[in-house]
Image (cartoon, rainbow, N blue to C red; front, side, top):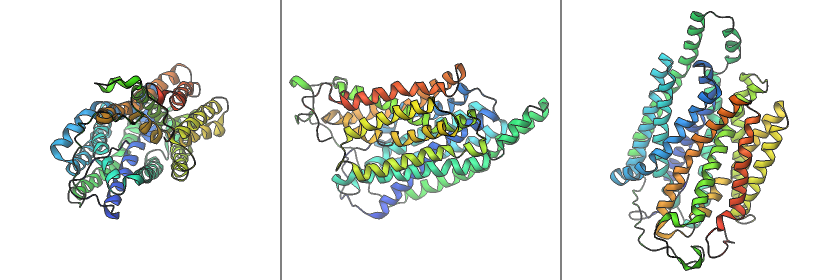
Length: 437
């Protein structure tokens, strides 16, 4: 998630202990976020949903970023960043606790409410924790620290589906087969039993989140405060063309296209991670095997993070990385559409590799040269994370109308737009090209 340069009240120490704390938070981000990849097929069975209804899981979770983008900043002004992180963790814990009554009564709307509350808590956490990555060490090495945080996030994304999938989807294939022979009473009892499998995992998650909130509250993290951005945009050759003086964040064409590009990127990233288990089942692969597939997607993404640490910016600019990533996305998507079985699923997993370097590239290309409008631009980019709510829902609608494989045509134009932003879009309205980005 995005970071911004925010001064520390006092010193800005680059100490191992604070970085470990922030790394733990990024692990939590990834763990809670990617549990949805298992919840989608699980709830589709337990609550008897079609594809469109099941992808409301992603919608409920990611739409909270759109809703909470502005309130998060307001909350942090009142609480401060460290207390804000504790409050965010407690909000995620409250959302996790809602899974208990949702599972006991098999109420899909309560599941969705819990997911929305979890997402709202994570929005607060993201807004509060990212500045620390910038200030806990030299500014010139902040990108490297962000990549390390991305690895913490990715490792959690690999582990989370494996753990929850082993608990709630281990015998799903047999249950789905047996449901066809059950009468209504037996079917209801079996589905109730499946729904209640999430109760203990989410009680444990809730307890751990509350404990972590207390530890963060008492941690030695330095308190930071938002920077007063009173200066106009710098005339560094990267601002608006033709000497225009902007009076609104909406006067930066490259930012607005960057927001749209980020919206599409988050959407395709969530599609790649959250649909692959159901897509594996569509390809005739048992759920007991398919439940591992999201971890493969995250493993590919982790490989991309490591490549980015080694290649950017020494061997590859962020602009070039975004361009090549978009080309890989198009190639892997088309390969998935025109192949079948494990091969097709493998290409969906490889979308994790294509997606891995997009966020770190779209972000700086979008906000460079905004000057005093940087915070407003950052808020728009945070709202763009809601692409993870809208595009998976569109995928589910297409899957119901056609099939789950043909629905992947949705991501091809998204990667084309991302590629356009890498080649030309990030230059729209600028004075000159940003060869150093």
